[in-house]
Amino acid sequence: MVATLDVVLRNDTGASQLYAHVTGSDAAGLLLLRADGRTLYHPASPGGTLQPVGVDCAIAVGPSGSTRTISVPRMASARIWFCKDQPLTFFINPGPALVEPSATNPSDVNYNLDWAFCEFTWNDQQLYANLSFVDFVGLPVSLRLQTGDGSIKSVLGLPSNGLDQVCAKLEAQGRVDGKGWEKLVIRSPASGAALRALSPNAGSVLVPGLFTGYYQSYVDAVWAKYAAKDLTVNTQFTWGDVKGRVGKDGRLAFAGVGSFGKPAAADIFSCSSGPFASGQGVSLEMLNLGARIAAAFNRSTLLINAVQPEGEKVSTYYQNAVTNHYSRICHETSIASRGYAFPYDDVGPAGGSDQSGFVNDPNPQLLTIGVGKPL
Image 1: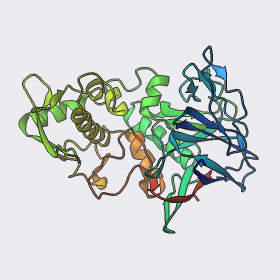
Image 2: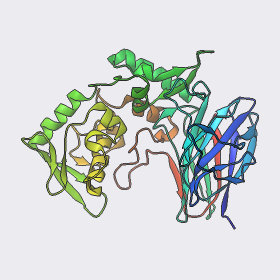
Image 3: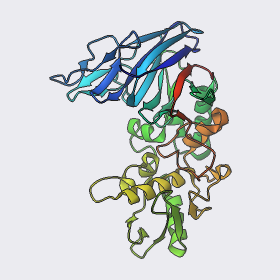
Image 4: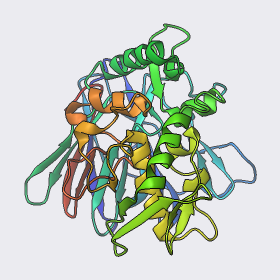
């Protein structure tokens, strides 16, 4: 018998209909839920690209104010997608591989629709679900998890007007520093209303060169600082504390581990390119160090804290003029400042306050997801 978890979906968007789609993977491969919200569908690998899904996987939640309960199996790298007024369109590529809606491709059939998603993995160890602003901010989504011991864990996400607040703050930041933050705001061509606010990583895909050179002065200052003193990174793993210093070759070197060249803005925002890229010859310890350094660059704390991340304080995040203002704005707009705004937003001091906006439990009983306003 397949283990399942009830998930309650709530439409508070004001729309007459909200559609949901559940995608992810299990031991059999690519997995979607059919429109009944409980029947599993494993697409076959098609003979060509961009092939239709082949079955109805649009789950109608109901009009604003209504709820619908679906039943999800154990899944990995899963998303629950939401779209106002009409379903999203997915395609299947050979593999099979899912072609998801794109927030950075204006020719995508979903581009001008009002949509968002949350993420989860439910395996034998636990349910882990989180809100994600890593790609963009869209419809407000919130999570409430009822656990086996009867406790409730919640992430409230954005307020009902959160997207408008984020867009207004990005436009204001663009006026302050002239760096193009306002270009992250995407509006409906029909109504002019905000559809989404892109992350810098996504915005640089839509607008090539958008933040080229943005972090240069800050990176130069960091390199100068750590040419004169050690940067200590606590790996929060078996490697413990590792000390690094910028050498005469201009690289931030950690003895016996490896070294980092200067990152560009795109490397910092993505946390996965340039000196932070994975690949052949890159050890797990280097990836661990890179994650913590990239997080500190996004939060602009490397000039004020030489002990990463154990010396970090949330109150000091994003205080430099050169910082990830998108992440800053997401956190200051979100209720309790929680929501995943860049790829390593879960990095922080042991026992520190969570920034990444997750709920988890080894024995989940009921997950409720609100769309449109906090639960």
